[in-house]
Length: 248
Image (cartoon, rainbow, N blue to C red; front, side, top):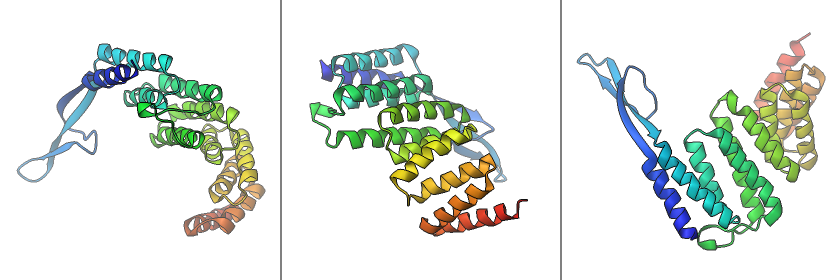
């Protein structure tokens, strides 16, 4: 049963993809093929556009849901569904699925199974590392419309796992980008308590205070970031301190 669900999920997702080739004046991706005229000037680009057949996608999702319902501890099926939703750009359901998985982790205590029903070693660490990677992938899209998704995933995770420094830090960045400075600093201060020498956290606290207009605390935390950071962080922190000191 479980093998059938996985195979059918993968099969329908694979055949749902539809590639169309177009000739355009604009380059749409790094994989686009550049065309030049006889003078060597760029004449256009051959672009590959990926679309999906909704009926086949729905079949893929249906079999993923069946697998999750029958075998809720199979984390590979849950993350497989998340991957599909991420690929098709359905970030609303992508977020919902991650949150469901985070909440279910409280039921199974992170006793996850992976392919062939093999127990996932270090289940909690593996699970939280993957959640952090999803947050980073959302951030890396540089799409401000996805910041609420980051915050929702981050805050749900922190509700159950409040001492995860990386997730505290990443969630706080999304909060700062949505101008929720006090809440961001609150999370970061907790991260600082957990790891007082984490220069990424210290630098983010400084940035939060800077954006909030609190020059004194911004300088204080840039100094701490410079104390514990690598050479690049030290240089940037000192530059920020100098700029802040010039502000009346």
